[in-house]
Structure formats: structure tokens, C-alpha cells
Length: 131
Image 1: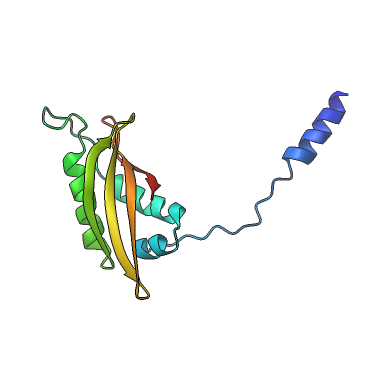
Image 2: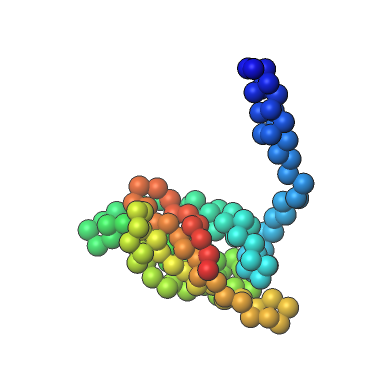
């Protein structure tokens, strides 16, 4: 009976092949236009990796200045995008979430997204979601 379970497990769980090719774009604007959250996550996380929290009395989350720098980085790096602050640590989760709005035009079509950015006090910020 034990052998049968192993064979069934291998058949059921061992045959999970991924046929779908994973595409990645380094273009922030293309990722927004195609609703490609994987590429957008990678791009935003790469930008956020540079900034560690600096907790102060005026900024207990430690990322207020960092979030402004991320917005500046997006605006300076991607000519096709215009990023702006929606709110800092305004979604009271653990860790708190901040929001950045990014607007772009791709092939004469206007797009915008709001990015949810995790802003933990003990590590770098990271992409959480887009809407």
C-alpha cells in the first residue's frame, strides 16, 4: 500500500509542468500598459532595494524620505512615466502600505496605476500590489 501511495503522489504531484513561458519587460511603462505585475514588481523592488529605513521621531516608519526618492528615481529613469505620491503609510496594515500613482501613455493610450508599497520600519520597501 505504501508503494501505491508513492506512485500516486508522483503521478499527481510530479507532473506539474509549466508550459507557459514567463516573459519579462524592463520597461515600466510597458508593464503598466500590459498589466504585467511580475515585471512591475521586479522593477519597483529593484528601485526600493537601495533604501533602508531611517526611523526618526518625525518618521516612525522610516521611509518617508525614501518613498520620495523612489518617486524621483521613477521619474528620472523612465521618461515615459510620471510618478507622484498618493499617501505615505496611510493603509494601516502591518507593515503599513504607502501608495504611488504612476501615469503613462503607450501607443497613444493613457494608463495609470496606483502601486501599493510595503513600508516596514525594519527593512527596505517592496511592491505589494497594483490597482
